[in-house]
Image 1 (cartoon, one colour):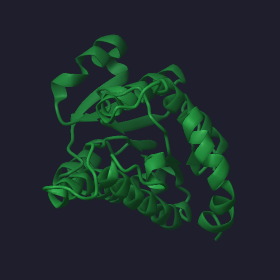
Image 2 (spheres, rainbow, N blue to C red):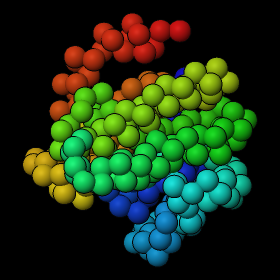
Image 3 (cartoon, one colour):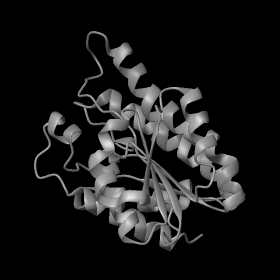
Length: 241
């Protein structure tokens, strides 16, 4: 199912910086009527508000809190497109002190956070025949040892994305699972990745993939290497109905 950005109302979690901020800019550049900036700190979107005026509306939201996301869905009940970009990623190996605590925290945001967003906005997106975009990662299909708990949390969110596709796709909602490699963000810098791709590669890729009705997006050069190896499995197993 094809989804265009022009004249649509969108909501983006974690919209204040990095990939989220780039998605806001791409959506507005492609004609979005309004973009909700869903963030924990409502002071953090001032730059976007100054730049785009009444095209953006800041709303307080915390994907780790169920009530917060339910309240968000009530406030933004006119959305056509929801992008769950909010996530965390801390360098952590599988064996280490406090690994359970770290893994639980990343699950709360990266996996349960998506589950909260998908459930809270399901009815609105069904009514609108809208689109739901989940920012996953190449780490969702291959473990990175220095990002073990992050990789596992993203594997969980990718599985849930497939589940949401089965549930909401049948009701006319487009689902897009985005799998970037290292992108030029604070998280990539902390993890020690060099030569990371620009955030705009992801945001512009989302616009294109929504228009083409794709389920998977591997936007950058490293991600496309994963796509080449994964494509047969994806087509014959993941996407088989």
